[in-house]
Length: 367
Image (cartoon, rainbow, N blue to C red; front, top):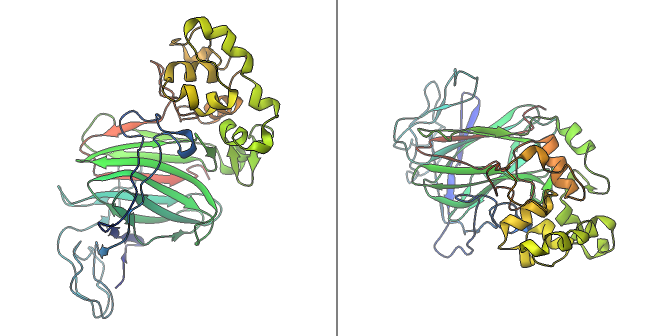
């Protein structure tokens, strides 16, 4: 049975719903955003479900297909695959216009099931997309998006916790470049870009819905320029590793970067910051796992003023997390460490779009 149907040149994909035996549970940035373990990005790890059956959206199950597929009616101007039968329900047809700013919006009936995810590859090389969360995997899995504008549409479940959409360099899904995070619950799309673990690709996210926080967030530098400015020593292939990712490796234990904040603890001890290691501060773990105020203060170079609301003073007096400074200089407003959402000058990219119907994700929005 075909899992997708081309509609006006846009592939409208189905989802595979996880079986009850699918294992795993996780946390996501939905709610507080960057409070997850830094080894999995802001919001924590993603639970992985098993696969059960598919639900075809937007057309027929294909030649010789069965009648068990349910989903969209045939797209306007499209055709069903030979020998197949069409599903029932709403359609997911690409609208010729879009929004006033040129954003793509799918033409779906009001109240249609699921949230449409529109994923675009603006990079100069092909990408392969893998979307997974608790209870569902987006299909077709490992979809190839061609360089310079290839796109794929998916319909995600209305309840999809701890989800990620990840871009890979290969169809085997071994060479991960970057990811975005989301939790979908009761028509609210909680979403963010996270560079907590590394930076591999510039990304843009834009949600559509009824709420006032359905905002666009993104990193708008060219992919080649982003990687070429990575702080010294942190570039690994096509990824710029975070300070924590670099220092967590035992082979870098004696590197000066991994001890840059050691002298800061004495400065803030009277205020209540715990004694720890520079690596634990970078990762907001160990004694800093439940201490967002001091983790944020030390990463930002503000040990004497942990609740400073003036973001212009962050990273102004070394030592500080040089990777986090680079992220905010290059891609302002995106998570660079796990508690980057702490304080009045929230430095995270977390948004919650109520009444959400669609989420657009563009890798390399500026090429």
